Amino acid sequence: MISQIFILSSKGDHLIYKDFRGEASKDSINVFYEMVTALSGDQTPVVMSHKDLHFIHVRQGGLYWVASTKTNPSPFTIIEFLNRLAALTKDYCGSLSEKSVRMNFALIYELLDEMVDFGYIQTTSTDILKNFIQTEAVSSKPFSLFDLSNVGLFGAETQQSKVAPSVAASRPIMSSRGEQSGKNEIFVDVIERLSVVIGSKGVLMKSDIQGEIRIKCFLPTSSEMRIGLNEELSIGKSQQKGYSSAVRVDECRFHQAVKLDEFDTFRILKVCPSQGEQTVMQYQLCDELPCAPPFQLFPSVQKDYVNRVLIFLKLRCDLPPKSTALNVSITVPVPKGSVSMSQELSSPDQTAELQPKNKALLWEIPRFPGGAQLSALFKVDVPGLSSASLLEVGPVSMSFELAKQTCSGLQIRFLRLAPTQTGLSQRWVRYVTHSDSYTIRI
Image (cartoon, helix red, strand yellow):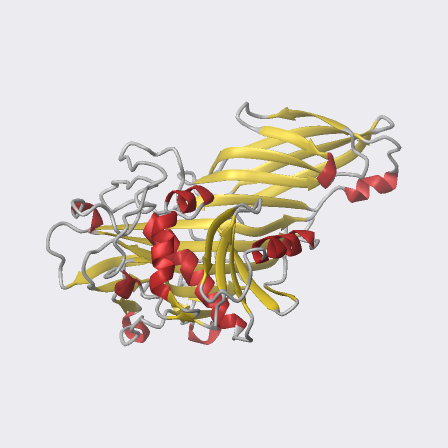
């Protein structure tokens, strides 16, 4: 049983507040924010208590999604509800941010009225809610076919090399009543998160791939969608056949709505997607990287003069020549007490800065083509530098995004709708790999 639901910005601003039972005062918002900000560390407890009031919260889109209760419900039920509320807000508002919540507060209140009655959860189904929600979303940014400035999660390249704009899927699932033609689209993303540890000699020591197939549907009517994966996909080491170039994952999980009667034989997923965003498949591959690591680092650290450390980094991108890594960021821990830094970078679009509070230097590369090699020389001034201080340099951590690339090799063979939609329906597919943890020891 839920007493209150409220949404706060990262600074504690009150964006949404809904009291269902009148059991707790509005001051509970300030009590929660004081509790969550007083804790040290990035990972705050999901469940916290103050006197006889319990707070359960999640972080989504840089916002706090909080439910308070005076009873003792299942925390997992409340957490699942809050995550579903955030997903529905994203579906109906088009994006999940402080600005979109402020601009669509009336729509979010209408959602809460339909989802919860006197503290009891009624429904979180998009198919049911769309029959009752009348408020139209206010887009935080007008949709434009010519706006390609932002790299969004969805948006893809078709077989005819036509590219959907990156903001194409960042729009509400319920557009204006007259905009029916824009709804006949479906977006499928294969998203992977890569975790890698590379030793000081360039040997791969540990790897992990967490992947998912995520769809966002704008079809006005429900149709069965058939998603064809690699025919040679094998699950678990025991299923791998011979020494062919089979795509393998250790384990996978499916959404409850996915039908698997053709999966074992033909590797086809069948699902009737609801309007909005949902994950139809999650998979994992541990301790094995089917391809070479996307980056190799060749570092050199030495003492120069009395109080200066020279750090030379040569970074090579081992992606195919037509691929590009975006938003590459390299963080190098430096000795404690570093006060200043000068750098020599191999291209003008790169940037670097010393972060004394974090005891690290940050090297940023906006675009890194496959097969290219970049270098940087950093001269870090450290008063009272000793030989032991050189051991404080490293390990190097990287973050990046690989467009049109999956490290596991998982591919979408086809997307088919049955029955065929009346009118033109667009189907888009995109592959993207994010770095979850990419560590290189020096």
